[in-house]
Image 1 (cartoon, one colour):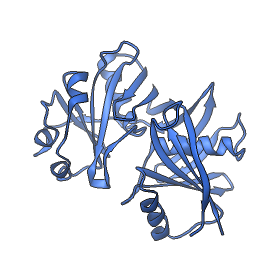
Image 2 (cartoon, helix red, strand yellow):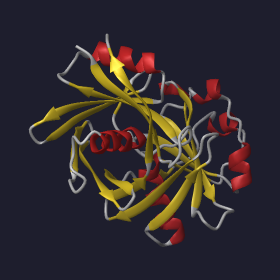
Image 3 (cartoon, rainbow, N blue to C red):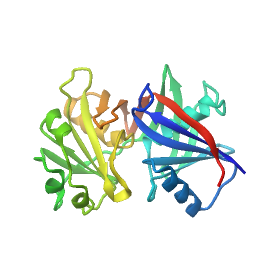
Length: 263
């Protein structure tokens, strides 16, 4: 039985930018090994698997190496595909049943807005090897349940970073978010995201990281709505709105490939 599969560039309004994710529309559940094999075959930072349920869509996310608990760009890509293929109505709030609970997505103007849990950090002493692996002075270090958060002194420092990825794998978290104020007045803050331990040296645009970044910059800037830029080689734009313990992540997406998975 063939399975529809799409490749979507998320958090961008143009092809070949943002963060690519594969999205599989599943007619029925398959075993974990098959999901992981497909994700390895796609070799993207995330492959999303959607299975229709009576109360929404079961959604799972896999990197080429592991299943993850939360992923923003592949959720945005999934909502985009469901709307594009008319599997969800334009005025519908789409429910995703995930390892992080029920997440929702809805169309908001020309963007899709995700309703995610806020994932605030707490300040910590830097773990061994973190500063050496990143190769830059650390202005601030925090940690949430997924990642380390590091603020550096400037956007120029952020953009010029060339981490030692082998050494970074010795830092025992999913990944490391690095952030700074933006020198471009259009954006409130910049970031990059490194996760070599789960098979992604640098993720192009990381929605789930902004569940932490929104909380951090709310404390720093005293406001709750932001326009953020992730300064990877591909780049991407994320609109962030913090409301209580929820992070609302807005962005656009573009389908670049549509086909059938035959295995």
